[in-house]
Structures are given as C-alpha cells and as structure tokens.
Length: 113
Length: 119
Image 1: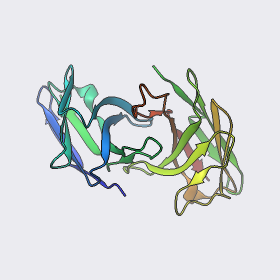
Image 2: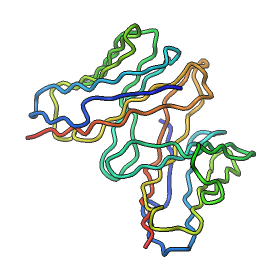
Image 3: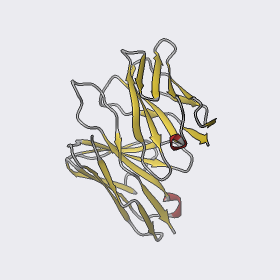
C-alpha cells in the first residue's frame, strides 16, 4: 500500500520568509496530492491540491510542485504570516477513487513575528 | 464550497458511558464518510469508512463493537464510542468527499472535530 513521508516535522521561519515542506510517496499509481492545514483544535482544511498530470500549481502565496519520477511533492509558502502557523499534512491517493487517502505525519509550522 | 458539520465539538464523559458524535454533510450527499482519530501531535489515523445503507468498514485494529458507526442517510453518519475508557480520549474527526467532477478524485472535506475526554 501507499506510504507517505513528510519533512521536516517542525519548521520555524521569520515572518516574510518562505517555508517549504516536502513529501514523498511510494505508490506510483497515486495521482492526486492534496495539502491540508490544521489549526489547533480544528479539523484539517484543504489549501491546495495537485494532480499527476501537472507539475506545478499556484494559488496566491501557496504553491505545490510535483515530481512524478522521483515520487515527491512539495508545498511552498511565500511571504509567510503569523496566521500561517499551523500543522500541515500532505496526502496521496491512488488512482482508484474508492481508495482512501494516506496522510503524511504532518509538519508543525511556526511563523515568528 | 462543501461543508461538513460535526457535533459536539467537545465532550467529557465518565468511564463506562457511551458518547455519540454526529457528522453531517450540509450541502451535498455523501454515500461514504470517513472517521479518523488523532492523538496529540500526531497525524490522522483512519478508523473506519462509513457507507450509507450498509455496514461500515473498519481498519485493522479498530474494534467495531466499541466504535459503532451508523450511516442512516446520505447526509448523516454517527460514531458512538461505547463503554468509554480514558484511553479512548482523543480528537475524532469525520470527513466526506463531495461528488467528483468529471470522474476525478477530489479532496476530503473535514468536520471541525470532536475532543473526547473520558474521566
């Protein structure tokens, strides 16, 4: 089955700097890769996703890149703000719609003012 | 956008009692909903897949008699923690997938979670 690794587990950056979180997956059949942001005491929220037929996707300060050959994908946050502080989870899902997502272990991002 | 509502957000119960958590899809029908458990500073662990009109599918190691799941309608799934013990204290989160667009896999929408404390 799919296995998703995520690094780093914790990340501290100064406000205004960029943050990068990387994930690797094991199942080459996976074709959908969402990123979720979870604030303390709340459920995860989808912030961006990418499908295997594209290499990069951007939404304002957030971007995701995908390298299918190497089986890794990354989340990039530019011009970080204190409200970006949260736990971020990557996930991968196989081609079969009925299969479940596999989540990475999470990255705790702290943006220091 | 798709919204999943989860209640209660926080519950404290005594050991040995049962607690019911509700998960509702507010603006879409969900034939399948998912229940996760999350321990502090850890990732989400899938407990079970709730299927409307049929039995839930439990992940390995999850006691189906302890975590009862009922998906009686296309918009409601419930998780009942029976005979709760302190080790059942955790953050429980449900999720559902809105209908796909052109057959493509889409993202989960998560509820806001339920913090269960068993004393």
